[in-house]
Amino acid sequence: MNDPRREKFGSYIRDLANLMDLRDWTLIIIHEDPPNRSNIASVYIPLGQRFCNIYLSTNFLTETPENQRSTIVHELTHCHFDAARKAARLSLSKKQYKIWNITFESGIDATAVAWAKTLPLPEFPDEKKKKKKK
Image (tube, rainbow, N blue to C red; front, side, top):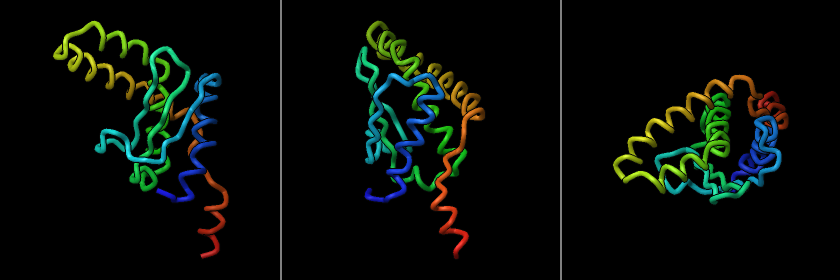
């Protein structure tokens, strides 16, 4: 996971977070596959903190810029709504929470897809120069 392209996403993710009004959040980018290996990214947010770990899978770099942006916006959107997830997990039965979480994730994703369209795509100028030289 020592791909140098991964490091460039740190500043891009910070820029998106700022645009999404998460300026006061500490973001740690984890260059490892998410705990659920079927995801290309995931976020972990400790209870009551403005801090998160964002996991980017190996496959994240093979996604289109549009999918990369949408994926990151999806994970950052969780920062705004994570208290609701934690409250549901604590107050609902496992079966109720599973049903609630499907609906919640659909809402997070719909919000992220709409919001992502208003935000910049990842763009790394030095990679464009390399492609032009070939």
